Length: 193
Image 1 (cartoon, rainbow, N blue to C red):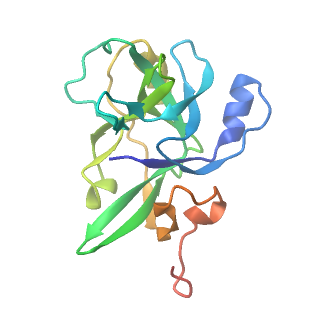
Image 2: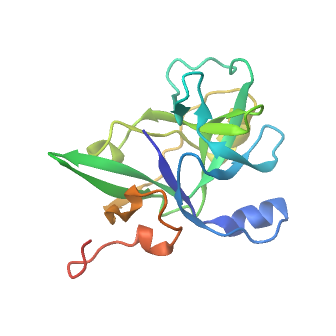
């Protein structure tokens, strides 16, 4: 389940949409208003997590079995991101890892957008290396060409972006922790949280 991510390459968004600089996000979490790109190629904010009838938030949707078109009020969107967090469970402990794309400052996750509720969720797929070492699912990362195709209703092969990952502070576990660059710092042997 992808429940946290970063948006660090905000300069790219500012240039693409001709808007003032956007502050980076180091702990984008469910319940927060975050940036998405709609089918009209419009940058807008929406709440991360679509409220279901049972009161729970749907933050992920599996790509497997997804129909060509979404149902009801839902439509497609893309979610700008620089990386994401996953947790490796080992015994009683959960260690967070930061997964990022060293060859691209900003990528796009496939997403589902509920325009009426102004909310979105991240589309996921089976994890590939290196993510599969710690978690069975990961965001469906789109190729640059695939972004427009996704918004138009196609489901294409996901991007095979080079990814890297490392363990980070457990401070990321708390969504109330302010956004700060230290959340993605690679720990060294002298400083472990």
